[in-house]
View 1 (cartoon, helix red, strand yellow):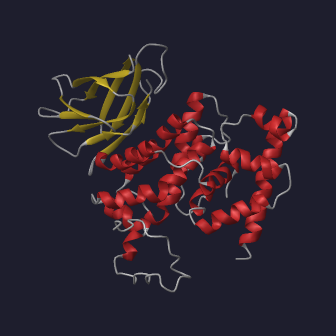
View 2 (cartoon, helix red, strand yellow):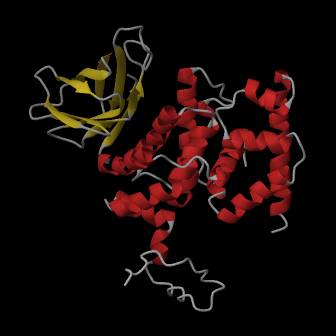
Length: 148
Length: 213
């Protein structure tokens, strides 16, 4: 055992008094469908604003980058739902689209000429954006969490 | 005439001479090894993925809850760990250590959430926790029911206040320092140091006992 918390975890697990809730098991099973085989993972990098920091009531800005491509996402939450507006730079070319994935819904958007996309009314929680390019493997942003 | 009982009485297959024999080992048995499940899940086999969830989900949940996270936050931390696995399913270098990887990743996500919430003081920074497939975590080790029983037998063999304190923090994680102090009849300032001392003592007892097995 490595530390206090893992000892407590072991005690809790062995006591069997706090089983995994059914909805947690269902989400875990559902995650498998969110594989993006062959995709290059774009990790979070410093954005125009500090990545992941909530700017009061204003938008939250995240930047992901891989393979010479950046995905910037602006997140606004209102009434418990999430609106996303994003841009892929440079625009990967005609016919490219993005898939906005959550554990509950997936939405696909064609990129505008300037590489922009938007989606509204998403549930809070974990999301990832996959950019399907006309040439080259898809780029998948690492999973990030949006709080309501 | 009554309908046949759909749930016949449980028979202990090890001691009951009339109980049906254990099925013979089949060639498909090795497919339950975690490393094989990881490979099958990476190739799109959903049932293999569900077996991973069934096998390691409880240790991940217990890990997130051991830091005192609420149910909703523990849910987020566990989800995060599964999503990290989805992301790196094809890149896991040593799938034999997948249990330790999942538990360590859950800890990292738990600490990240705890830091965001600022209502739990993490004892490590997330950066300190690099998933190490070679390191067997306590929570995955205890998946073996026998080791779980030995852990609790060790608790029961301890003197007060350790016995009661460990029972409380393991079964009622929402108990705050104040409640623990009242239940144990000790000053609030003594709860933290006593907790640390009791957990260290428990680890010593268990490791001493394990060397005998």
